[in-house]
Image (cartoon, rainbow, N blue to C red):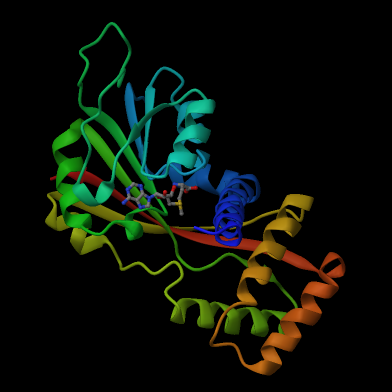
Length: 264
Ligand SMILES: C[S@@+](CC[C@H](N)C(=O)[O-])C[C@H]1O[C@@H](n2cnc3c(N)ncnc32)[C@H](O)[C@@H]1O
């Protein structure tokens, strides 16, 4: 591997961490509203599948302070960040199914492999090669009355409100979708087939225009610049937008789809 490639990999990974953290900072309240939909009043054991930089894990720990929150991921750098925040981590490839949860899954005075009260999978199920296999494993791991929450971005977050910008943003989203960004199906049937009753809903949030929101928006538009499907005119408009980004009027908003599933 040459130095340029190494540098590129490191900075791509850093950008990915930053994007996840910015999403948590800008739309954190939104995620809390999503968690409300699960209707889990108390939990001893919670598992965050594809935990990333810990946006969901931190929310889960805050909501269930007495629970053991176990984070699963296959990216060593994410796992290091999660460990640094005091989470129990399990390094596992979710393509192989629901992992064995070694370690202090629940409080030390209880049995080591107690069933799980809440499994949370936010923006992660669409990365998994065999979701049906993973979901069957989740079904087996859940406690009586346990809940699975699958969360996906219904679309990419939107930031521009004025008509011309909003249309450019729409075309950027269409080009990104054509390249498979955030691609996921309606998970309802897949989750049902794994032995769950499922309710699907959407939560939309409008976030305040903070410096983090501006940085998050700018990150998205900078990433759009690489999209092959953009026309030359749109590429020029994007460049112009990025040049005067600090003056652009923003209205950050995002919609998440949540599937709340309970064993049938
Ligand atoms: C888009 S991030 C979402 C992170 C976090 N859940 C959030 O909402 O901010 C997807 C995460 O899933 C993890 N992931 C993707 N495929 C995986 C797999 N096959 N096994 C384990 N983790 C995986 C990635 O490493 C990444 O941390």
